[in-house]
Length: 403
Ligand code: AN7
Image (tube, rainbow, N blue to C red):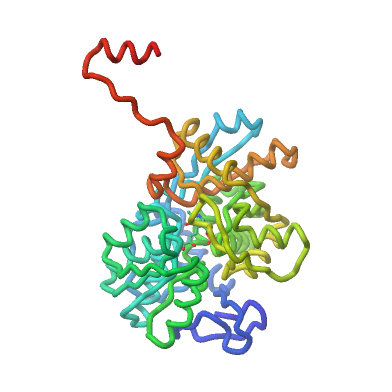
């Protein structure tokens, strides 16, 4: 476990989230030779596709007890109807909303909670715009740990709130934004002895990188040309890049996608860095978007994601709330995929690029849909036609349909 800035090594058997010298983020570096030796056994591809198919590429002890809900192995859905509309040859959606708690967070949480148990932690915590709290609550229950989640008051989608409460977390509403809540969580971890499972925890990123392995495997070893992905805290985009880069460095694949990070216009500090060429992040003070999952003004992983996106040869940009909702509706009506607003942001970014003529239409494109639409019933209902009420007769139905 090393600092991404100064490279200082840190003990993986201790709960730390920042470099003890310079305070920067930590990352897990893979021992390539050891990984190659483990891969050489060749049994990975024979296992069912899931996070734990890649166990040998994940930093958990050989004898650790794994806490799993069978996460990962999510479908890579070929979207021909949508592809035709956009004039794209090959379009896929990686639907990570089909994970056990309905978002990609489960990939990181199974590894994070497994690690928490290795470390002997009894209480886990996170700040969350919703999905992290839902996922953490479920896995904490599974592992018999206490769970405390901090959420921004009034800004968490109903389904996510229901999950965190139902799975038995202590849910705390903070008067402020996600960024304010994360601030409290980070400060409290030392003082209160709670293990932090936000994406500043490098083991979360390790679990999430498996989505990139899966995409390569699902495309029979030919990675896409482009990967469109929403950016909130920047953990997932960094994780995907780590996965693609590791698979390439291990020689499993021989190319990687260009990563296009997509943010909502009202919460877009990373995209702003790309637009202005700035080399540090200026936080957005009052972030706002209909996609509450990515309503984040001060992304904790901005350094990781900016590096990742640049290394891939990509960039970050914005979409409006209107574009997000239109993409969400399009995905639901044309492809049968019900994503929450943040889970449609990547597609909104793709549509915008296609319309601007900025994409070679013969490209192979994957959009990551990060969360399920059932998470946020209020948004779905508010942009759909209300059910009509009729008498229970054939006549009434006929008249209604004529209208
Ligand atoms: C559906 O739950 O930050 O860029 O606290 O739920 O890794 O932050 C959620 C983030 C995209 C952004 N899509 O991922 C939380 C939280 C969905 C999300 C993101 C989130 P990151």
